[in-house]
Length: 331
Ligand SMILES: Cc1ncc(COP(=O)(O)O)c(C=O)c1O
Image (tube, rainbow, N blue to C red; front, side, top):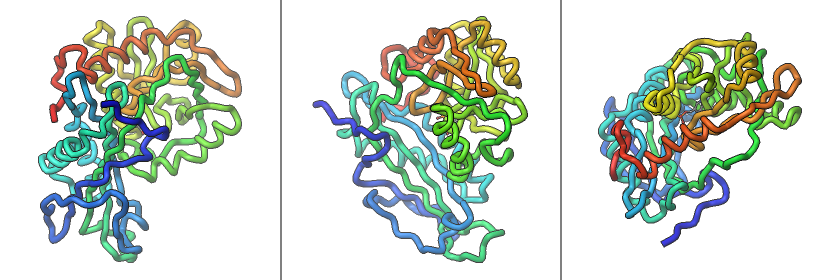
């Protein structure tokens, strides 16, 4: 049976969703409801004071109708970390994983064949209906999970132009590793400006020359058998794909060099033949084809190694090679 893939990423949802509520100082048993709407008090804490975070991960339909989730425990850990930093109740790992698995089972008939997938979007929001709580955390919260069939976000050979932004930051530096909505609206003015003024697809945020990440993905250089990327700090999101790329690349024989580097060093490496990649759940790896630095466009000479590392990861996701790292959870 061939299953349709919506034209717009994340625009169609499985009809039902699990809801895990936190009230009376405890997580309640998972309940199921329609995914078409939720009822919230207009004074809900998340709507006023940004007590909100989310996650993004995928389930794949492999040959023989085997359905797998890719590294869900990593997304659960990251949401737990976001919740702690936002002073939201921390979801219970097992109940969260059970809800992800059950949702994937219920949506199984809607999961397209690889390379398309089912994208899962857990969302945690503070629900206290008290607008006087600007300086205190929400005592109640709701975790719900949307499931959305999505096409292959990766378009082989398509141009990817990055505007290098050295003046502005993506978000407050202590919030970078939190996957919260506010960080995306914080980055929006620079992302829109980059598109309008330079026709750039993404902005690479490099405050004071320090190469960090784009508005929606991590960044790495592939240079002389090394993968070079910024070490984990509070300033940027600790991508699950970043971690997968570093592990798989090491297994392919690359040296992994997690170090701070500057725009000047990056430019010199690119001009000397380095590749550059974006990493994230949606496309796994997107090779960068050019940079705009100080108004000047600089071409990247090759995308070959990035594409090879991408294939090594998607082969695991699609069940084409052995899952040596135990990354797949069978549903
Ligand atoms: C700002 C940002 N950085 C990095 C990533 C990559 O994270 P992951 O590999 O877990 O998808 C994402 C998105 O998914 C992101 O929005």
